[in-house]
Length: 262
Length: 300
Image (tube, rainbow over all chains, first blue to last red):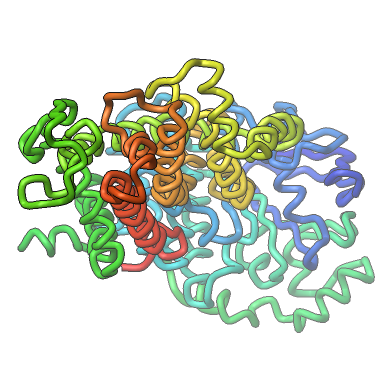
């Protein structure tokens, strides 16, 4: 695919001697929202980490926006692709104010007008300006996750890796964050690669999904399959059956569909 | 709006206000702990004594008066006089300057050194960790005083060399703590996030890892002050620290040893000073630990 935002070919990832992901290949088109689903330990998050450069022990090919990735993190890559972590309680430095957290990416890349950009970004993610000089412990989980999303967007990347961005939050807050992510994608033309184990979130957020089991991709399906159950792989059918077969049954997604992000 | 409200404002308007508010909360917590306050007072007393020694001390610390040898404590000589007729109170007061200088210099040299070595070892892991911790283990495995003795013997006796020797023997403990702390959060997501936005290793270590190690370091350093004072006094006692006629407390005890049975005050008074100051630093360190513990940092 020529316009692939993310392209993985024959990707094997290991931690030490243990191979946790085998033979993963898929393409995510520019502007697409793609989900990686599967149960815990199936290697979904590891794939994201390898793309981000945080799991350097891999073989195969990874390219993002047509450029092949190296095995570690690097400065030029940080402008193209950023990641939002699963646990908002662990992803913010406990001793730094929100302002410091958000201006740091700009400082690293020598970008000016930091104060103005921080103010803009806070309103873009729906946080009031009075949060700007608070410490993370003075924020709720949902507010922290907004800060984490804001930090990822500070360098204006085109590709966002989302590692279960809502799973550590309670239901009503999940809905807010899902709506926020949806709006940001629309406004900024982002490409999402999202890891989740929650099928209703996939139907709400994503266009296509890859199902992973034991480190391999067993099936790639469009989100319409969630409505008509047209999966081919037995594992996917099990997973689908376990979710109750109704993609809108999740309370968070129901809440998100009912409300609109301001 | 009162200053207090401004400090405790939930939504600070500037970074300065946020940091001051944080400091204010810590101070109030610290002041609620009576032992910590006692420690703080003792340390402040030491600072004041050192600062105003010439005004506090009734006599010069080195002036001899052989007619007034070994006088017991009295209204004229609060702590008595020593074998050369010098006023012990004045010597103890001036000695606080030496003690404070030793403590401050050792802390300034060894804490940052240990902190950086430990953070680097913990952050990078692998062979960097193995080499740095190997060196640390070598230093740790030697008894502090003996190692300091060896250094002083090699460098020559004197207060500067004693400071260097104590600093060299004090850093491994800090390195161990800093490494252990770093290991607990080096793979945390906020560190990974900085790597993702392109932060260099040195930026991560100095801006993100070290600030998280400093609180336990401050606690440890405060608690260590007592040990440093004792080591300095020990070197002085053995004649390898401050040289006569400098009024160093350890050296004073050493001189008083000769008369300990008949003129107890000569050795006892500087001993009291050492105990009091050590105790003050211990109390303060314990109090600081309660305040600076990262787990409690979030509380108001």
